[in-house]
Image (cartoon, rainbow, N blue to C red; front, side, top):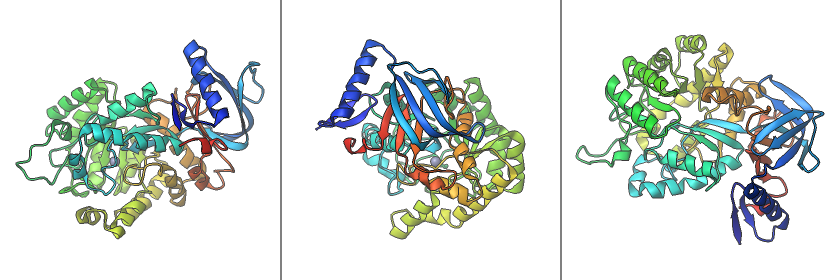
Length: 449
Ligand SMILES: [Zn+2]
């Protein structure tokens, strides 16, 4: 029998120790008493300074970190978690996910969402959120869903504790030209789509502003615009420029009015430069960025969020015949070019964040990108910074997440061994805490489903 615990995952009846902890947590929560926990960290990675500390204690009260150090005052009744034989890192952050599309995009065909209601799609997304958290990612920046606002529903259900998943920051919908990279395309012209499948379409600077006003009102945390065509969209070409510079400038200006940052999908060199010149916070994919684009990104402090792992999954799907043929044609040669341009951008010192385009590859596979980032020019510390301190900076939430410091959320992960020597260790996270609640702990895994 499985019991669901608020924030504690599934606990098998009979797993007495775990169940007891959960019940104590619930009792404390009900009594309004903040749980006090001390985590003993053998090694602690600080991405802010790029250093590793040893023999640290992390004092956690409720969902926040209270103190960190070798010698800190610890209350007598604190719960202890011993990670003295492990390396502890801040909870990881994936800056480019699509958690709220259910399992419809598994075979790469966006039309599959038409076979289901929006409710079915968002409920299918519940496991996506769970496995993403359980792969070590305590926060994601989700950058678009075909069924508009499904991501808002998923974010809020996680935040309430109804389901488990990473803390989500969401886009609400794709802001895209009609027939463009973020649109549902390929259907006959006389097919009338439901409202939520063309919610973000805009075809002038003022229409862009109107959509952003709607999204801000409906709870978006940031805005996702499509500057160029896409790989995984019918009738769209990565080489085509879609939004004009004026439309992108309108997007950035209008988003700023609501305190929102803009992420721009862009594959070709001109679309990338248009987005940077317009003032977006990050360029997604940045596949064919040229030297001028790299220099511009560095000058403006624009993040590049390059999904250099997912080519593995696109090629595999191609070999298995599970990806539409036109998508594979779009993708030809782009993967390797993107990886070489990633190397150039790293060497040039451009700000880099960690984003995988999760949903292209199976949910839970985000950690696999770390090894590719190191293979293509990053040091292991740079790859970790991309997924922690840099990601938090891109999100505008450095005061809450991205490193293990007093005042921030108690989001921690731990691994055996040294990820600075072998970054692929991050594919096997053994301990996960989000906001003070433990979701995974070696030895207790058998009790979880
Ligand atoms: Zn994407």
